[in-house]
Image (cartoon, rainbow, N blue to C red):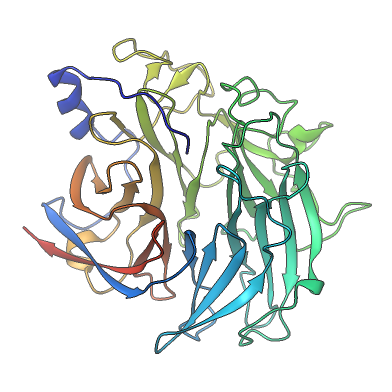
Length: 386
């Protein structure tokens, strides 16, 4: 999430960025009426939190990932404890850090979880599995760590790691990787794992590696790193989410100098090319007017906005909670780190509130939406019609 120059847009393009048509419509039932979104702070004092997640284990706990190297657990009632401490293993310069955690789909019976972080030496994006003594334990020994996969960082830059982990509906682990800040030379290359969404089977072991390559991956029958790829052509997919029921993936890709974008990857549709570095959102890279040609295999963005609206998109979730079902059912909620704007994306992008320094969103077990901010806060979303 590196600083980028601000590009001044014409009034026409500014308005276009705010009322973009939905290119691939999600299944929704709620009205698209204007909704104001607010946030209630429940905890503070976290050290640069970047993700909040539920293990969906019926305990009501929330886990907060801190960039500086710890996972904290918030127990119902407000008590916060250190769940896992990796501070002496994690590089934190620039955009490096402990980036995310994903819990086993059946964590109550199989208390395993996977973390992604930038390694202290070398800077590779490292995926490691850990094992809790039980699903209800409130701390985990780091001695249980088992390395799963290292993705080398392709440059000496300290940005663009990606680093989101999430399990898909079919039980495979998806992982995002950034392009390394090299301008996108690796993002569309099938010889590099950088600038991709990867898909691996971490619940099984095949041969000499601690995972299997799903046979339905687009390049599973080939050799080399491409076997792990699910989608390519991404700059810095800092945050994506998997919708629990459909298996669809919302991936938000941080822009270069002109556009921020969010794309909907339909469940089971593999091998998509999201266009970076040839395209940035709907436009030829670096342009505010020249439309990117949609070629076979290229997936255009579902939503996008320009620099007058914000810079550094923070991907969120479709809302399927119960508190605001009549207002937001199926709506995609996301934000922008640079401007603090919160977006309600349903057909068009609607600015629906603010949350300064938002770095990540998450769902509780009941599918209410939470958020964390770089200043250390943990917040619960609320909504009302306006």
